[in-house]
Length: 533
Image 1 (tube, rainbow, N blue to C red):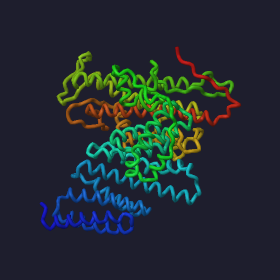
Image 2: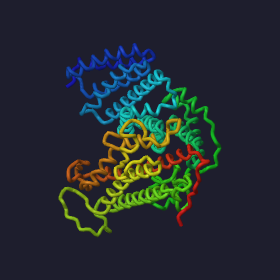
Image 3: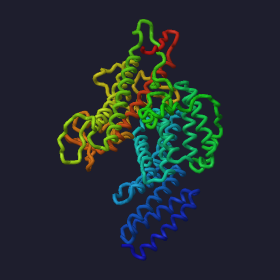
Image 4: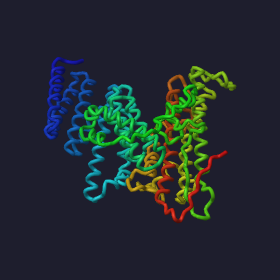
């Protein structure tokens, strides 16, 4: 129970924090005051004279100010002190999820600054140019991954307001984009604008991503230019909000970009009466190089492919990579349709056994639902993730990296012998944002500690053990013989796995194209790709 003395002390600390906020332009002064407030706050917590949740929320504010001041001072020790304060909030069991999500956001900002300061120091010592950041980033992949995961936690929190979620999504998009993971990054920027339509910085970053994509010359350039123009206009219209979020320098950067005036399509919307097409468009699951819509009004709009590949005289005609891409695409489309059918049937039956399901299932008296719809989703999720290993196998053959196909996994292939270096013979563009790095970082995120924890854990359980849907209290994915998941968890994991497989497929196309760009064409023969009849 709160005491009068405790409330007075709490109000005094609140006034001191407000006063301290005025000193942020003098970070050393601010950090000294914040340290004193922190001591007083813990004395108050230990006394038990004030609601502990109120104190933890105050600690959250302290961590934010401390990290901001320490970042301005470029002081890693002081940044880490702010991280300790934020971690205290994250570890507090009784505090609401919104405060925990905010603490995760604070930690992500701190780690981003620590990583940047380490890179700056490394560059100064080695006289490394900015375009050589990728090897350093891969060596520091643990801290980079943790930053992504923390931003994702904040972005997914329904307890945070749209502005906070939008900012976290934009930060996550920036981290992904820096590694060449443009498919995932674009999704983050689009989601950031949906969470906060006034986020001009997210619009500017989306435009910049597409500008670089156009300059690379890969993909649907007219479409990219039209969408670039759309986001650039939005960024310039929202200049004031950009300044508030990211500062004047960033706003000037977006000001300096010029529109293309492209007549290309912003989006091919598909048949609005076709539930399958609308579901694909909603979840961005079209296997196309377009960033919006289905990519084409043609009947065969899943058009992401290799247009041509160069080979040496005497090599197989056509090269095996065409067959590889066909198999991968066909299996993705099958998994996607299976997921849609399972999800649709589950919703259609109001989470009971579907009327078209011919199976007789025993009632296990634990609110479990057996039958075709949940099994379809489990199989679709598993098949989506199985594609990743096959993508690595295809890359191994095409780039002749020499591994036994039977020993290849997506998670182990891209790093050379488990090191922080990209596997030899894979192309690495000079700007450090190539597809090999994108695939390597993606492989590092498919694990319980990564950006896509649900994907791999459910796939392993669904492959080797018994997983079924329940309307009761779900166990989640476990190492036991049986695991139960609820329908939202199952649908989410299925969507996530399909998005991951789609991104990996597109990055593989980029990887082949990057190798093409560096080849010695005078010694090679270009083979066009003909459509199957």
